[in-house]
Picture 1: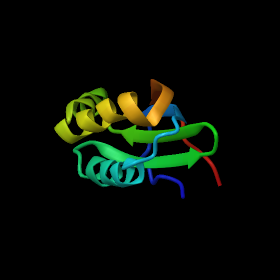
Picture 2 (picture 1 turned 90 degrees about the horizontal axis):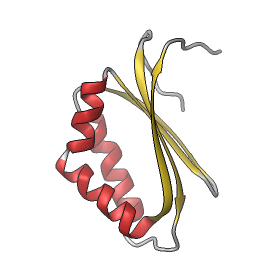
Picture 3 (picture 1 turned 135 degrees about the vertical axis):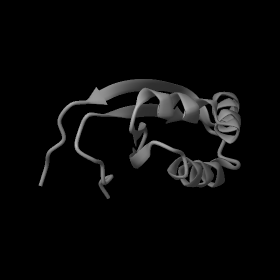
Length: 103
């Protein structure tokens, strides 16, 4: 499903990852983070796909909302566990969305 984003401009956080062999607790934490992100001020939506390479794009009203999410206590714990257990590598990219169109 596509995220129902507003008219631009807004921001996208692109999280690209490669999973490690460890899986214990990952699915529960991913679901918890999605629920928690949706409750954050400035959250606009999310789109995600996973195969060998996972890509999750979350959409945010502004950079302050992104900063607040990055510092959210439970999200910080998920970040730590991701680095220690669930990912063999990841990249985070933040971009300003200037145009949004489709059919």
